[in-house]
Length: 298
Image 1 (cartoon, rainbow, N blue to C red):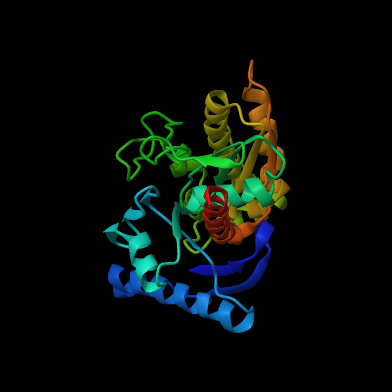
Image 2: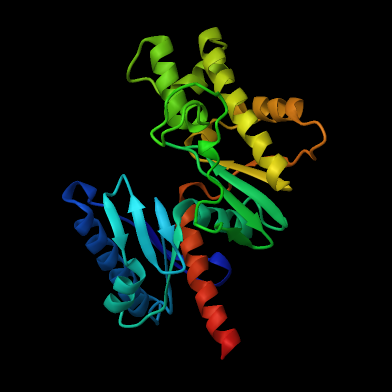
């Protein structure tokens, strides 16, 4: 868990990290979140002169932000957790906003990160899986049911590798950091080798690594072109572990996307700027949005 006390305009006043404790079960994770939030609010009162005026929380999985419910997260094991209500109770009535981790990270990248100043962007973090956040005019679109932006489950290789979602050939089975790690470990015969090792081998000219890497880049480009055909973003922001490869990823990716577009306008393709703090900073922005909305309606 990553947390921060965030001032106006996204200024970080204090940061802290803590293990989720998921090995102890979903109830322990929820209690950890509640206790962590209470400690941070108390820190503000003691060290910054006032407690936090609002709280934003970003969680993975399926999220009902409007109702404040963490609906489901496979890696945390919870279902239908009324997280907003629990936090409001624990923090004695402080207003709380709940968001999806990738969309919240996209909000931060759009407002104070790589998408700052652009009117439309698509944020795609390449980690264990692949998700996406659709940014339009300073906000992130969740969709009618909270599933908007799930680019990782666009089928780019029909009939291909099975995906836990039930489909075959999903993008995240080919272009996520986990997928590249799996492919490179199989290709080089070292089960401990991962995507970072593959990128290093690409830079040294290893032809086997180049082939594994290009397969991932091609799949990613196919998925991104589908997304930009539907969304017409001005900027594509690529983050997550795979983006840490820098131009080893971005140079061939820009070329692959450029080769695939026909009538579409080619967007800027840029690395994310906020790293693994994006979700945390975005949660702070959600909290500030609550405060600003309250002031506007007063």
